[in-house]
Amino acid sequence: MSVPAAFAGVILIWSTTPLAIQWSSEGGGFLFAVTARMVLGLVFCLLAIRITGIDMPWHRRARAAYLAAGAAIFGAMTLVYWGAQYVPSGWIAVLFGLSPLLTSLFSVLWLSQQPLSRVELLGLLLAVAGLAVIFAGGTEMGPRVGIGVVAVLLSTVLHAASAVWVKRLSADLPALAVTGGGLT
Image (spheres, helix red, strand yellow):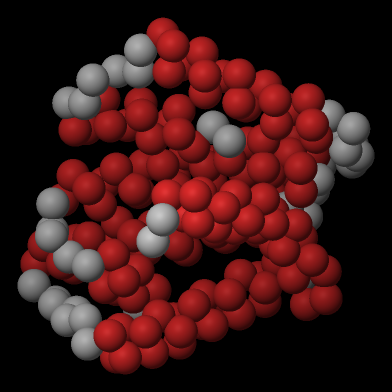
């Protein structure tokens, strides 16, 4: 896949996900929406694993990787779906804009990676500030917006921690197998 196509795909997915979370939660509630998303994700993931012939091992290290992935899939997604009831979708995008910063922090702590340089840190903070400016107009404040922000922030932290945890385990598994294992 070309870099521009991958970049466009990431932008498309991450820019529409918060809105899709809110829309899907409107009818049957957040718990139905997140459960339906996980069940559909599992079905399509297992189908893709079957079609591609990817092996899904169940040895100890693989199970640990599946547990780490499942923490983000279920924990982070449940928190963000619940928080989305009280937070505008633009704010979710801003809060998840902190993911690279948090992932970097966990990588420094758990993987002994180099800390972000001042220029990289400035770039990330500028990106988050840009998101905040773009979505500042969507400041629909409800009485529970604070608890919603906390839930989305916890979701972001759990998502970043889980990604680094999976890498730290060094299970050497295909990404699709890790996702499928995390969903099971």
